[in-house]
Image (cartoon, rainbow over all chains, first blue to last red; front, side, top):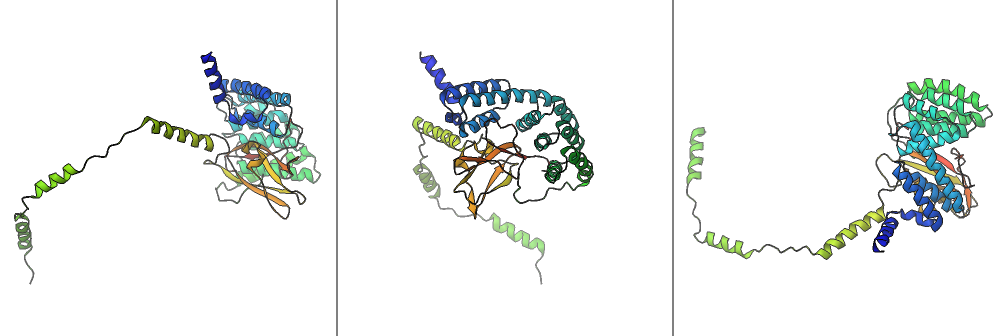
Length: 201
Length: 163
């Protein structure tokens, strides 16, 4: 009896206090998923954040649990594609790229052509698809720029494509035109690190 | 006009070799003073040790340095701006502040709401909560397409390679 009580109290103590914002039933299910992910060596902070997002948005418990479970599975897929050395931000960006329509093979290929971190390259890929660029066109563009472009170059490439799309250009055409121009500019850009004012997303 | 250098050195040596008269009672007085000074007694009470340990653990729990939004090396400053002239309040909530509206209330200047956040490299989902009830995405940032909770969100990515 005492041992059971001690074990239960230890479990409560080990549980992330932020999850107390969830109702008991949802919290129990989320904690189980988090513990399982931790056991598998997956990052758990993204799972906790997804649960907290659902709680703040007053989502039903079942939907929160489903979102956390789906994210756990996708983090596992991203890790398989990116390798066991992938960081948590890389895995999160990898999940975004996969959900945008990139294949695991694209993630693996990206890993071979670009030195870490891959977070920005994966994120730009996902954001391009979110802007309407076909997934295969976005993947080709990012893979072409990835070997030498800086993160800042990739962000500027994404912004340029988004501007063109907003002005009425077909997303695929905007991407192919900008990737040719962007590659030339990026590879010749000054890579010095200079102080900057606060950035905008 | 000038003394020979050897003569000067010789006179210095002689001065140094002269016996110095010491008060015969000096040794006794020194030993008396030493005996008078007792080492301070320091006892470590178990209760104080426990309290000190509890204080350190409490400080760690309050500061929670392991959370992702703790300012660390490699973090970058990001300004978030949202234009809402009619809003009474706007909060920035996202993966970087545990989706807690109380953590990042935005300040307004004539309807332009703004706040600054330190972000370490990573991809963050976020949204603006207007008047405590209305969820709005950032019109100036990529949309989070994988929103599973039925409200719009945006994405900001902080790179770690010349971003």
